[in-house]
Length: 241
Image (cartoon, rainbow, N blue to C red; front, side, top):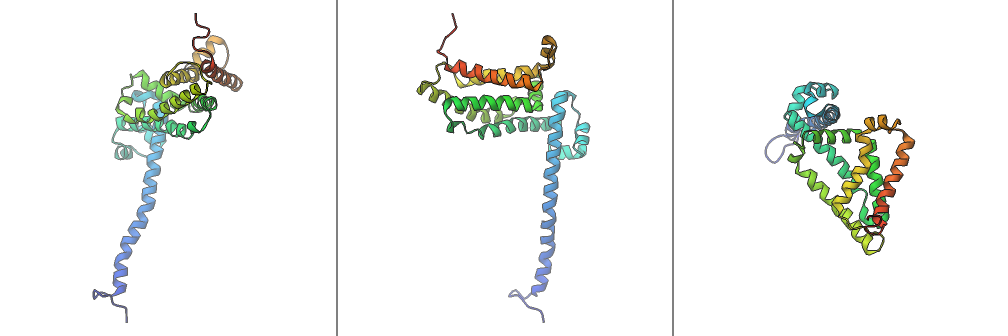
């Protein structure tokens, strides 16, 4: 005879009743994984498309094809072209900010920390042309969408604080002499690290050389580091008449 539960129902019957629920839950795990993977493929394809074509030029059907998905999936996961672009823009900034946090600048001596920041910024921009392109394209349309993403300024604040800390500690130790604020300095670092990338083709023609050449980039990298550290360590106003 079968076992009976305290509620008057056979134990075997109760186990059988639970089995469909368990099976459904087990089946839902791969489904969730597939959905997450599909969403990620769409997002990656969107980042590439928006970097190359800009918001206006990129097409939903082409993004779906590149992601091995369909247009309906894009609308299901993101809602539409504008929402997809916002998600791509957010992912673009989130990626670099996440890596910047890993630099742990607060644990480094001021000069070493500043050098590390410049090295990272130069290397990241050099190795991630999609980032450079999508940010450039967003500037072309006047920052229309980035204004809708509070996370851009929210996640930049810790970086500015970390740079401020480096400057403060460097000045207190007598290592840094320059009078500057963190935001101004970071804009300078970005300018030094991105101009040769954003204007690579025209500058290459102007100077008759390939600005994507590895040896040239290596020399440029050291020069940028030297410029930033020299500015910070030189007496304020030195060379200015």
